[in-house]
Image 1 (tube, rainbow, N blue to C red):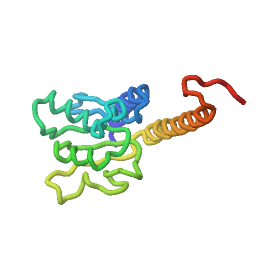
Image 2 (cartoon, rainbow, N blue to C red):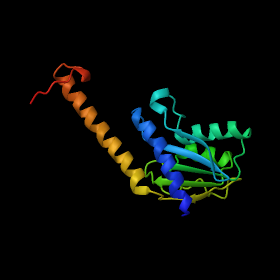
Image 3 (cartoon, rainbow, N blue to C red):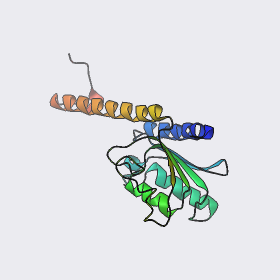
Image 4 (cartoon, rainbow, N blue to C red):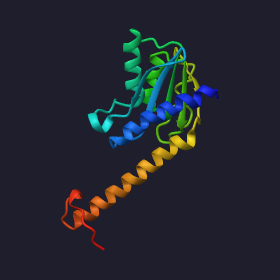
Length: 173
């Protein structure tokens, strides 16, 4: 792990906070090239109702647009959660050199947890992978988000049983 890895992961965490503010899963990403952040993004899947608006894909799209090329050779992606199969494929295809992630994803992680697409030599490009950078902070954001989401859904069910809409909540013992 490089000293800069923590710095850039903190920038990805700032992006994840933006997602959280929109009630999106708090995942953020930044792409760095030559020591400069060239793009940043956060999950927008719920906002857009579009399955492909993951933080990584939005960041890749912005970086390609900024650089005027689909080849992101020499670029590094910092993301708070291990990339899924879709994002891993995009990282390979866009030629990102290095992927640094915070928390592992046991259900969809394709950078070493569930499988490892990013270093598979059968592809024409492989990414260097660094895992666990600020893992506790990144994982804690996700754990807290889903805990709060489950709590909110439970309360909505309780209110529905009482015939109330969630915004009509009253304190009933």
